[in-house]
Image (cartoon, rainbow, N blue to C red; front, side, top):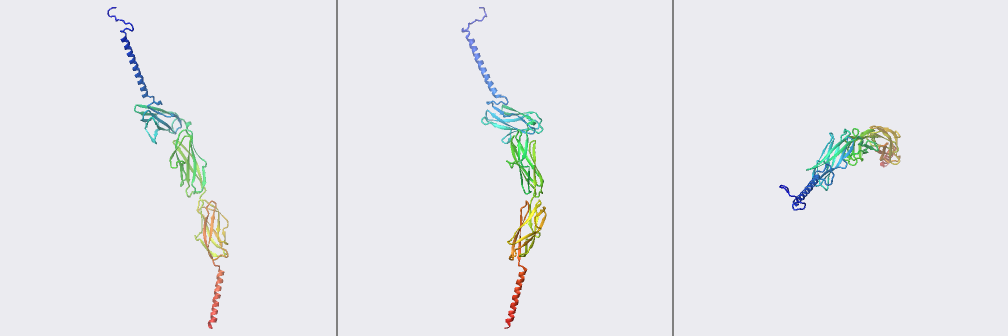
Length: 415
């Protein structure tokens, strides 16, 4: 062996043992390092969950069951969002990518919100309302909802495709579009609003009628609501009430009803046919409601029938209720064909008391009737006077008595 040569040791010799120990220690250190790296990778992957990940162990996620929809221009589409967290925390929300002219609101608890407080047991829900303008061009638009809480972020892409064929239809119908009656009637129409579109729509309803009329339109189930929602594929009732002007003449009157939701407007014409208001009065031209005469003799009394309504009176007749044995005739006889609104007609009633009627006051009741109108009555007090022949007989008897008494006083007065 030369100077400077290293001594060689056979394996297993005491000189080789230190080298083997160093190798084993290096391998153990390397293993521990790899384990630390692996553990760090697991922690890092947990912290950096991919955006939109639905993994059950994600510290923060935001999801929706239907992230891509197809709607018509002028529609409103809503997305139900669920914000899930691994531990209770505040989560800030934002919507990006909203096209010009569109609106996108996050709503919760009846308000527009920008953040929620969620916990693992009860994930918080938020509704995203997207309003599409009526002039939106057919295309697919991409929106993004981002949830942020501290170092955690989750993003949810949403696609809205504008398609005219996806619009469906909205209709407004009624079984009875035309009603008929006098002007004193309150007319009620029952309409059905059907939403055949794929979106829930919020409607406002309006009704207009002729000048002087009172016309209202309200949702049947919410009489005080100004607007109401009709879910996709569902129907809602609308009640329209029309009260004519008190002096509305007979004729046909249009009622216009419109229901509006965003860029959609649907309507339908209704019609009311006024037959006029039937009304009349029965009295006398001078206002006197009495008459007098002798028993068995005709006592004339003029009656006046006035049309106080807005439509002609037809087939006007007069009937009477008299004491027993009395009778009445009329001039002119028979029914009156027609009396125009605001006009009056006079009829002479010839009242004949019974021949044996005792002198005194009696009541004769007259009744006027016409087609479509309520009958009117008036009472006439009839005074039956003592006949003239009985007055003459009575006077003669009195004269004879006086003459007899005078003769007696003269004859026997001298004695």
